[in-house]
Length: 121
Image (cartoon, helix red, strand yellow):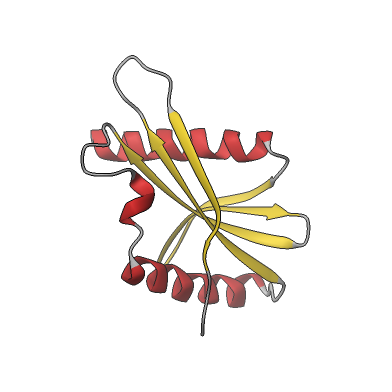
């Protein structure tokens, strides 16, 4: 397994544990379809939470949350619509972004942005 895949899986596990500590209920990870991928899916009261996880080793070029540009948001929204059809889920959806900075020999720094963007369509 490549180091980028390993670090991505590690970041997703850190994000999963972090969100569970906030009381969110984990539903699934790595939903894939022809539209794209959803990293993590949680339930938070009456909302299904779609989580994009970004990890970095350093922040000299910005943290991971800053890389979720408009195009990535649109791709994630399209993927989520496919997920909704697959799961027959028509309730509230929220898009969160979690940025994790994992520097060598240091504790991960987690930035959670709830409701980071919306489906305007």
